[in-house]
Each structure stands twice: as C-alpha cells, then as structure tokens.
Image 1 (spheres, rainbow, N blue to C red):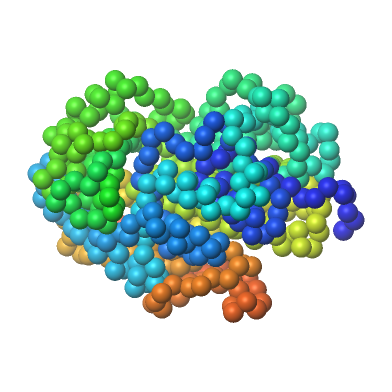
Image 2 (image 1 turned 90 degrees about the horizontal axis):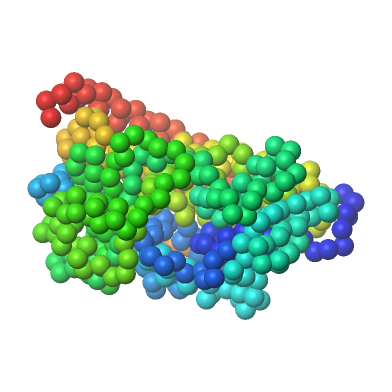
Length: 487
C-alpha cells in the first residue's frame, strides 16, 4: 500500500479516565504515539467508589508490568453472602475467591477507584505522562482538512492533529455525539455547551459512599441484601468498605437523570432501616462515611454505531453495564486489548494506513466484541434483578431456587468462569502467568518464552455453556413461577 503521509501515526484519546490511562500503557508498549485529552482539571474523581478487577484484566496488568502495583492497592474477594435486607436472614453464600483461584489461578480483586487511577498514571513512563493533558474540553473533530488524519479542537483553543480518535469519554461521550453528527452528514459540530444525551436506559438508581472498615466485618467479604424493589451492598476491602443502596425506579427511564443533595438525603432516610451486613443498617453504616455520597442512575444498554471514518469508541461510550457484576471497566479493557491487537497488526504492515484500512480494523473490532455481548449482558443484568426484586420470579430465585439448587455455584462454573477464560490478551506481550495452574485453560495466549505470537480463534465454549446454564435457571424459575403469587 502506498504511503499517504510522512507524519508518524498518532492516536488522540478523548477522556482521561481508567480506560484511557490503561490505553496509554497499551499504546506505549506497542510504540504507538498518542495524546490524552481530559476535560476536567484533574484525573482523580471527587467521589470514590468500588471497582472490581477480574482475572482476565489482571492478566493484562501482568503483561503491562504493573500487576504488583495494582495488587498493592487492592483486596482479594473472599466470599459473597446474600441476605434479607429486612431481617438479615441468610439466603446463600459463595466462596468466590476459592472458585476464582481454582478456575483461573488468580484472585478477583476490589479496590478504590481513585487508587487505581493514581496507580495507572504514576506507573506510566515519563514520556507517556507528558502526553496526558487536562483541562481540554473537546469541541470539534474533523477530517476535512486532511484526508489521512484528524483534527481535534478544544474549548481553550488547543488543536491536536493525529491519525485517529479513540472516544473513551464515558456515558455522556462528546466524541460519540460528534461522530454521530459526522456519520449523518452534518458539517456543523454540536455546540460546546450542549450536553450529549445518554443513549441508555436506567432501571435502578444507586446511592453510594465509602467508610473505614466497620467492626465485625471481614476483609474481602461482599454482603448483598435483597428486598422488594431495593437492595443494599457492603463490600469490605483491606482498610475500607464500600456501601451501596440500589433502588428500582418507577419505570425504566431513558436519557439523562440528575440528582441533588436533597435527593441523596431523602433516599438515605427512606432506607435507613435496611441492613447492609450482619448487625449493620444503612443508617449505621452511612453515618461512618468519609467524604460525599454519590447518587447516580444505573444506566444499561449498547449503542449500534461504534465507529465512523477515523473515529472509534470504547468503554462506557459504547456500552453501559450495571455494576453488580463488576464488568464495566473490565469490558473497557477488553475493548482496548482487541482494538490494539488489530491496530498494531495493521501498522506493522502499513505505518500510514488510509481511512478505508482503519475502517476495516474498526469494523472487525466491533464484530469481535459483539461475540462477547450475550455473556456480558446477561451477567450484568441478572444480578440487580435477583437482588432488587422487580418480579415474583426474581424473589423466588433469590430466596429459594438459588439456595436449594446451588445455582450460584453452577453459574460460576458454567457461565462466569468460561466467559473469563475466553477473554483476549495482548498478543505481543509476554505474560508471567498465574501462580497456580488454572483448572479451566485460557483460550488466548501471547508470547511463549519470548518467542512467536499466538493469535488464537475465539472458543464457542463460553457461549454454549452460558446457554445451558441459563436454560437450567429458566426451567427452575418457570416451575416455581406460579407460587410467586403467595409471597
């Protein structure tokens, strides 16, 4: 292919959150030039919340050489208890940590979101840190001035030129808004003051905060307490715990929802009597909180268009998942891994690809990520509905079917574990490997003893096992559906 430009290939990342900082590590290892544009004046969030890290993401951190740094600020998940939020009745428990180590040879970790942002930034090479720019609100993106590049303008007058744009700017993605306008043939950029409309739907809203470790609570234990239309959570880390109250909305609501301090206090008062852990009510636990409470809609959904021309989206800009399964950030990492693998292969063959070649890579990226959608969507949707009961079936599943059948253990073995084992890795970076041998072999592997690259094909194991386990759950629930009338 003929070279179309003498300029080095350069990626412009919009958004300075967790996925962008992870992308900075990946692109640095791939020797691909980049710049990050973050609209806020700082990278750290004002309100810290819980963040889960599944074994497949830890494999990526291992490849990037930052696993020890991440492990130092995280706590292994030990077990999960499901209880009644009304009277503390124990419904079920699962030794989840043992299952993760058995099937994957690694723990699943939890950490404070600001801690991970700090680690991801501090462990970047100095040259990469210099490419992270804050206070850069993107107002327009164009390709008209250069057929083989992009031009990004910011509200402060800054102009960045590059070869492609990755929109990692979250639920209210400005990049997505601009991309949709360009794809529809509009020559005018959306107004800088115009807030992008979230394309997702909210079924629940989430009140959250963090506290010092409460007495009597064990590190690494996750308590989830269920009730009618509401659930609570207390996840204990090493030196702090994270609290949550999940309330079902009157009806699924699309678009943007904003809440005030008065809304937070009203919700806290409404559910103050519910339990979040044995011996701890919502009122008792939240009374210990450090910093502010947050209240946000729990949006769910997927967008249809992931790319256009030289613009491509990742993370919450293309999908929003309920946080119960902890797959939000982890899915964003998957996006960047798949995209980086394909982009690197293209650049090795053609250092200055044209728009058509990039489009083919982007389309292939979206197609591969679509293969993971059934599992990702199911795992993220089923948990909040089992805990914050919307239907009699949800209540039956939590109180009776799961405890009686051990369906939670079957779900780990036949849904979650195969899904995690099927997720991609960076195909050109060596992995030191887990401390133990996983019972369920990973589908994807990269360098082996520094020699050669393995580019495996996707296994159908995860999807077929998902279908089987879901069928078991559906049959069990259907068989008891009639009796939901008496509850």
